[in-house]
Length: 414
Ligand code: AMP
Ligand code: MG
Image (cartoon, rainbow, N blue to C red; front, top):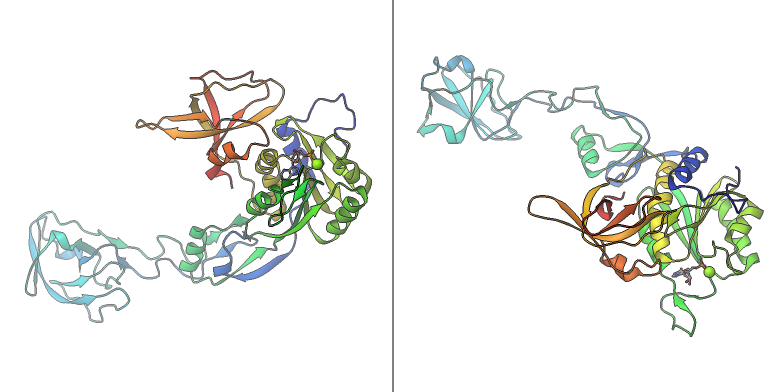
């Protein structure tokens, strides 16, 4: 790896370049394991799965009504058929349907071989055992065909894919009860800083509560990841170095927050350089400029900034796509779209900014976004009230109320 930031005069790395560099050096995990389908949600399917059966397995009714043979339709005229029995879902009609007969049938029930049509119950009149079909009754309606969803032997899911509830449903419909998934990505994270106080302890003068670890714990909640919180490490070079080296032996990924900048007590980049390799250090992103990415042995290292909003932004924009790639899941571009900004936004050119906004939609379906307020990288309260990023490109020099901007809803991030 080349240290992109070894020369102080070099321009900051753009976010796209940073993502490309990460893409080039991270390798998806190799191992796989077999898991019960009920435990496979969010795991990355490692192998294609083929259907052992046709779905539907039998011809069945799409409606509650009456099943009949279309030969009995009398030239578009009204006609009557006699009731020969019932086909329930799960309990098929056992007899043979004769010409001039129909059967009562319910949604999902097997359509007898001799029938090819089902009429909705609302369209007939029932008189004891005689069913009156109206003029214009159509043939071959409301019958679900064998294999019309999936043919026997067809690929259900090709993989690799992060399995959704719908995917699990599709696999279950084919009777698949176990799948081969990628092994979990092992991730360790910790906070760095002498000022940090863990929850449950009283706050001394000059200290702050550690909010980053709880944020990271939440952001990393994913069935594809096995995550360990390694606590707080003080601003002590030796302790930090020992922790980095130890963690690099046991995890695929280390994520730290704080100490990544240029202050006297910011050791993260220096230590990464001494015990591993720094790929890049500073990126043209606001908030989140000081971000150290590199490797210690085979372990990927992300040294995120200390300010909580910078942690969230760099996690969403840089770390999350990298973790996806590492876990073997296909890449994913979060949905962005245009909205009219109802606030003026301050911005200096040079870095791509992720301001926090509140998204709304009017009765015509048009999207609007308002600034969530104070945009400081330490201001969690405004981010807690916001629902999207307002993505302002590097060259942007600010936004006037009424301008169009690009938004990225939080709910669509991963
Ligand atoms: P640093 O990058 O270590 O200089 O930290 C930048 C800012 O983020 C400082 O105001 C730190 O106090 C703050 N900070 C660092 N780590 C945390 C944390 N875990 N939780 C909340 N704030 C933090
Ligand atoms: Mg610090």
